[in-house]
Image (cartoon, rainbow, N blue to C red; front, side, top):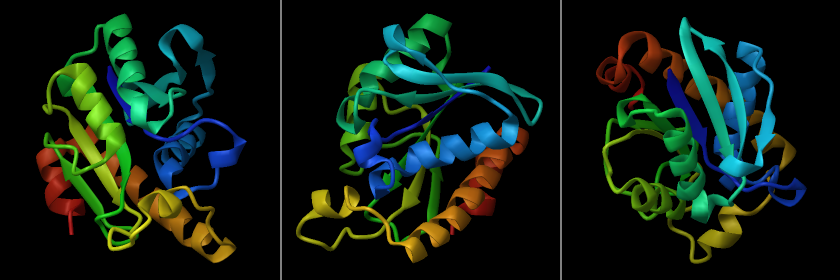
Length: 186
């Protein structure tokens, strides 16, 4: 069983912001795989259970806000007895140009507070992640950038990005992370 976690902020206020890219990706994956969401307050997350690409999945959208995502990730991992090798975390990244995908089997937070929280809660950096570029790393006010709403044109562009990330996730599941890195990391 694989656990795929998308980081984002709960609530209507944040729904269409760049920082919710992890949520958008999991919503699109849920739609493709026919997985429905259920709120699990005890686990501090929205969860979906199903099968996709011949793999049993649990998809997770923490309700703890990005900067405290690790609490929900830890709760889900413990509750289901999931091993680190079966965890994949999807996050936005201001240090990558818009649409760029970086798949890694492990690594630091890169300054992403949500990843910092996951690393702190799990006590390790040894879990796979997909970082998806949202640009803006050169800006003085990163908070304003990540929490700003997308224009209609940007939203259309991001839909293509979401499709690319889902394809990369399928590559990880079907062929392993090393092959997916070679294929999708630009």
